[in-house]
Image (cartoon, rainbow, N blue to C red; front, side):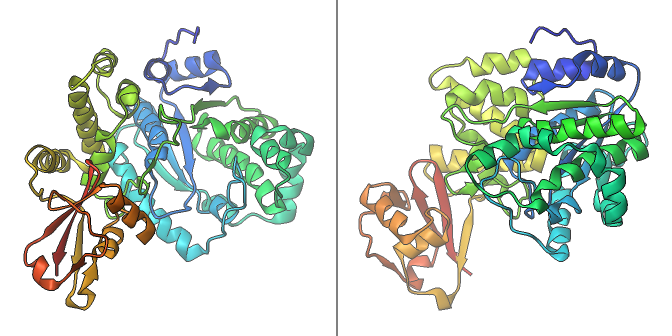
Length: 415
């Protein structure tokens, strides 16, 4: 990166590793130093929570506000009805209005941990929903006034569409409309709220450029786009996934302890980079901790886990998670904050294989049996060797601790 920014926001994005590309560095930089500006990121409501893969975008909005500007979180109440085809191999399942509303309610809970919507300041964040302008569109008017500005040839050239067509996988007309609707979002946000910047992952580049082009054509306004890299871990895995599925941000879908543990298990090579992206520690401190070796890097991982968990769940949740982890790993005890499976009398007796699956330590009976066969399972810290073991109510007079490998644990108790 050879550009030398004047604005705090672009300087932060470059220094901390958030920036993949920008449509006009100098133009955006000058807009940002001229006064408080608005930027948005759109979030479609395809699940009841966002996961760790969305955290880089949330942190970008947080830094945007911290550097004096106004972030807009745009809920895709309208666009979710169509589904974003970007880099997908198949069409998203279509959701009904009730499910979309329930998903939006779940997603909204997370944002207030990172972004301030309540301040009286000029840069108080806005939470908007694109169904506000999409649901009332007249199709013929929209085709005439907006559709005429889009070249199908150009849309087919975008990598997100091209990759799907190159694999000879169908792209429905419904999905093809998504990029027009997203472009229209940017136009409306600029018209209604003076929004000058759309941010997103680098897979959104084509959609962002479309919105800029449409706004210039219709309103003759200068607006900008900025993308973050699509993150993978150093071993090539997609960010936001773990052994047992997506790492959700809502506490009822992934407990604060499990969230903390995900960050504590970061690969050594990712520690410095993740500290810069997901915490607010000074960059030189992130670099120093990322360069640690041997057992010292483990303390850096604990710092990472604490900082990230504090931002989302608060100081107390982070402290409890660390205390539980130290209790489990260093003393071999049972921490208060472990994921807990509560069984009723009707569940008893239960095989150890079923118990491992029910507690979330394995996805199937086959996987649970393999875990036992490979000496990866423990019951109250003792190796578990008998896949035929049956647990009765008497064995659960006090909670049992189940372990899969060294880092994944669960408690089992009677309700």
